[in-house]
Image 1 (cartoon, chains in turn brown, orange):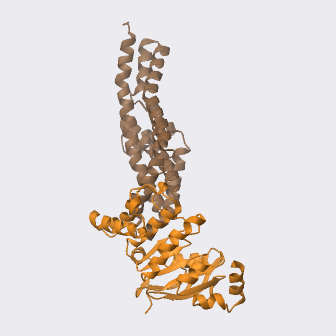
Image 2 (cartoon, rainbow over the protein chains, first blue to last red):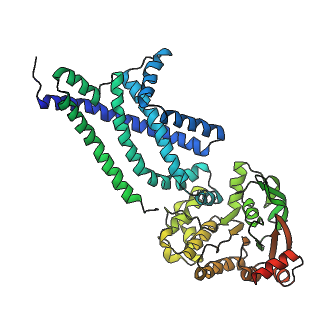
Image 3 (spheres, helix red, strand yellow):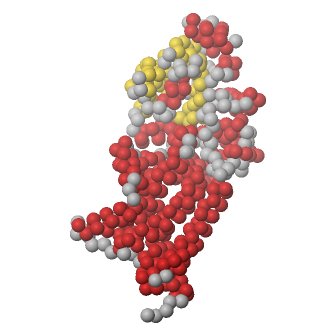
Length: 217
Length: 242
């Protein structure tokens, strides 16, 4: 049996951590785009669309992420779509992220007073112009801190992708443990790496919160 | 033909009927004050004139064009009818100048230079040439309201609606806003205002409309209406103010 140095462990975990970062980024960007789309149709929409979006949000907020990934990973093959763990994980996390971001952003948009909508309407702006020039610029400032804060949840959520066989940081940790029989060392390193990714994000979110708290403009 | 004509306007909020058949015509250059107790429907009536409240029944004709609640109609209507609100509703993330420039640029597709020129002109008109680069939170209430007036004027509306434009102001700031409104009236702007400033209404307006329980209860020349109210409701309303 070969010996593993600490460096071997860390090096291999770092290689896998790239996938954690990539999966997080992809899920966050795609989820953000889907979330923005849902936000727009929800804000403009008729009562049925609103109900549909609300149902979507509640479905994803009310079930464990693990189940969502299982359903994507095992469900899509049933309708003839064979998906790789990477695709399943990306899809699952994107849906999950979009549901939460829509909800976070909805709160931000709703915090923009009725007076802003009425004033811009009285100046002849249509819905798109109101959103673009009046509501979103103000809502975005409010939304930045909780959005960055939520990105931490996405990073930690990627760990669940290990269950469907996607080799990211947690899965790599399991595999290395199976080879080294040093679970404490390995998972300790895994935890430190998650922390090193998430902590700066948390700090950044807190910094933004302070920065935007009093600023209306 | 009048600039704005309202025929048999009905509006309910749920069970509550706020406007019970309003007929009103507003001529070009006329300055009209809507007065009445709170809940009499005067603000709602004002807001129907630019489509912020959609009417349940009746006809609104602005500048010869009948308005329905179709989006395109509403946007067209709002180009003719400007509005100033009690709470100013300036856009807090833009400077005074940007607040005034935005709509001419975005809605009327004017060039930036053109919009800027008009905005500067309007801000000078309301006496804020030196505050153009200030953000709303750096301005007093009276200054904010004057920016809001300039913002509405920059769209070159045919009618300007004023919804209790001094009610949210500290007493010492009321006059600077009223002075601007008075100046507009003197320049021949068509104005419809909901106001509690009775003395101002009496001095500036051509016509007074007293609303009571969702109807126009009494209307006429301000002097006449104030000094010689014909109905007990108006009489008690005017008396209650003195």
